[in-house]
Image 1 (cartoon, chains in turn purple, green):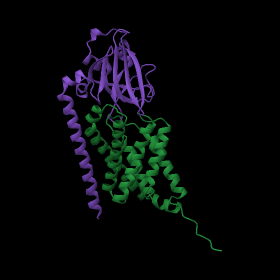
Image 2 (image 1 turned 90 degrees about the vertical axis):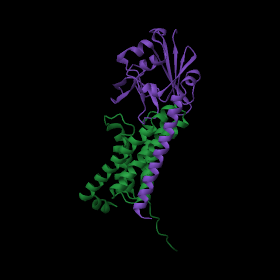
Image 3 (image 1 turned 90 degrees about the horizontal axis):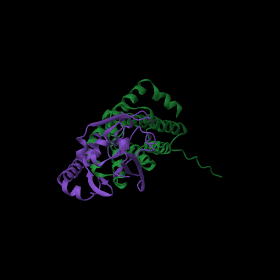
Image 4 (image 1 turned 45 degrees about the vertical axis):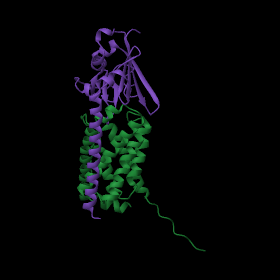
Length: 173
Length: 186
């Protein structure tokens, strides 16, 4: 087999992988956008679940988040640019702000190393404080979402919440 | 009494030192070299360039798998990556093994097309392993699916650039007589 043939085989394999990913992404996106009522009623697997006072409220939709203004800040630990969406904007998408008080507690839970769950709790006042830069950000691979910030006790990668799966809001702690 | 000839090692000590240096260079580049881009897989520009140069200097099958293994262990112990050491280790290993297999299948990195393709496959392999692990770790698949094609394209472009950059470095080293120097050292 000539080198040219082998190059064509590799190119063909890459195109095939791209098509599979495109079809899978399109199908999942379509499924997400076509079932808004179901997504509100029940937690959908593979999405971020939002609970208010223990009651399921919404599946956080990536399509909705894309419409939000972009967040951008530089992290304290490594000085790398971080960006995505402000947590306050994501919460406002699904919860009326007059239901929240400055002391309302917001717990973000994520999955790390498979079985190990990790969470961080912040108050609504801390979320609103622009100096804290509390934001959802795509992980460096662009395939999962992490909670990042510059707030004390939530400013390092070890303290951030990777692979976010759930948001719990306690309106009256 | 018969004497058996000493079994020759697959990698010479000099080659192993070179591969160890490239492994640490992969990790150091990940820590130190930052492109101000918010594109998934953009670090592949440096990463793949280093792997291609390593394959050019130690043109033996398995060399890059060793670099992937060593750099993966180093990165995991240094706490790099967002999702823990196992995730980090396998993504580094995947890149090394993929570029190794490409070099084995396509031949020498002297050809810019081969170097570019090896870079693409190496960076995409890293992305696919991360994707599979994200599914296994039950990280929200809605986001995984949403960014898949976008991630694939950006990873491919970064891998291609890294491959071509690696090829340019190899060409410069060859012109500078570095390969003749290496031949003496071996």
